[in-house]
Amino acid sequence: MGKGDTLGTTTYFWRYPRTAGIMTVTYTARVANARFGGFYKLLLLWRGSIYKLLYKEFLAFFILYTGLSITYRFLLTEDQRRCFEKVSLYCNKYATLIPVSFVLGFYVTLVVNRWWNQYLCMPFPDRVMCAISATVHGSDERGRMYRRTLMRYCSMSGLLILRSVSTAAFKRFPTIDHVVEAGFMTRHERKKFENLHSSYNKYWVPCVWFCSLAAQARSEGRIKDDHAYKMLIEELNKFRGQCSMLFHYDWISVPLVYTQVVTIAVYSYFLTCLIGRQFLDPSQGYSGHDLDLYVPVFTLLQFFFYAGWLKVAEQLINPFGEDDDDFETNFLIDRNFQVSMLAVDEMYGDVPFLVKDRYWNDSDPRPPYTAATLFQKHQPSFQGSTFDMALAKEDMQFQPLSDIEEMNEEMSSRPFPLFSRLLSGVGPSPLSSSAALTAQSLAPESRTPLRRASSSSSRSSDSLYQEGPDDPTQAETLPHPETRPPDIPIQNLFRTESQRSCSPPEVEDDPKPRNTDPTVY
View 1 (tube, helix red, strand yellow):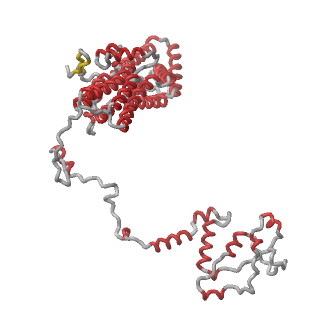
View 2 (cartoon, rainbow, N blue to C red):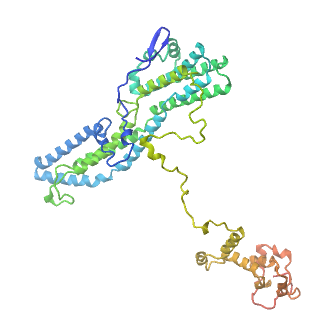
């Protein structure tokens, strides 16, 4: 018997004897280090193994296969054997049309994810107990009563939801009377609980009591400020949300039609294999039946894998039962209640003395190593994946920014060979146009004067807005203003496309313009 709590005149004890290894097969320590044949010891375990789950179905399949084989070999007539052989070949041919691997693999993945998410929703009161211990103050009897009652309401809500979804917890607390006798609920609280007429699950009622009692503690000054009160209610809501998710996981199952499809696919496939995988008479010359054996080794292995896969999903689809790997809800009830009461009652205000630590004057504290872990001390600490990278000396020299800019200009002025080939025959590429503009700016003497017969607006704009040469000595190479063609009026630069299409065609190489009006081009 463990330490108890007194409610009224009755003393209740919280520590229940636990039989080791009832549920949840744990083998983590056996596979802590990877080694040769590290899993072979796990193959010899029985509790929670695939052998324990599957041996009945495996024996049934083998007995049915053996019965059909004996009937085919010794009980059928010659004509009946020929007919059976045709049926066997037919079944073996079309059995592959059943998508067992795809359907079963997706189903098991869904069930495993659902199984782990259900464990993440288990209502653990650790955060709530820390919040109560930090926010509800008072070393007197009333302050202690506040903390213990708040924590008991939280544990009561978790118990009510677990007995609603877990077979093991329900067998331990089948009625509300058992909850009262266990000390989670007082008789007065039971009357209030039963007087609440609701057809729905009332696991949330203790959470409402928790909020009302916390508000009363705030009004009495047991909770110092509104921020602490807000934090306490937020932690309770997170706890209540986990209880709600467990209820919804129990309510909303994997769609029944999906479970039926997977089960029918697996069992129909192996019922077909009972006939299609029979060893036929080699003298008949059937393809793939050159060897006559009595034990279908690979068919049995295939049944072991596929049917075992289905058994895994069958065991994990509801982890609140009494299978070997189901959640230990009764153990969690004991642990949560004992730890939470210990945190809010006996440990409240019981803080060790404030002393200087061992490394008070040490700027580089280094905890010691044992002889078994001494080799890890000499290993260098990880500094980053590029910490040991080496570069050549010339690659580590900084380059002037002017050189980098000149290099970028040279690279941008070079046309890419691949683009030149792809764009050949299509028109001037943007890269070649930019290169031409760069060449004009670098070599002003190579520019030609404006031609009147230019039909491209891009050419006119490029020629009109060319900058003058930087070197004054090169100005004499430019045409004289008197010999230069007349300037184009600005209104003609903005002619619409329709006006340009109506303009008379112009000849590029005509030395004398046909129209003497300089305003028309």
